Length: 97
Image (cartoon, rainbow, N blue to C red; front, side):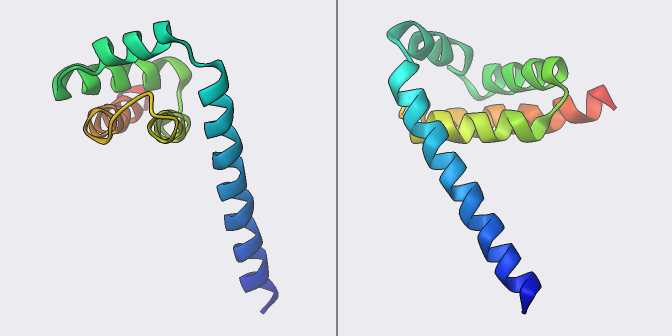
């Protein structure tokens, strides 16, 4: 029973963190970031390349994925743009291995 409560608490903490990150991104993101994300993820291929490069640089597909989810939540990226980046993050994590 204790493990179930801890799991629920951990999930709640994760959702709270995502909400805080999304609201922070909405506040600090400017027009310039929005334009850059649009250019870097214009096509699925360019999104995959962007996701691969970013993941190779920061060495974490999880961080890339969580950041992209925050960008979508903040309205800086669309869902189709995010799919390409997440696919690229999976490729990038295998390259860095």
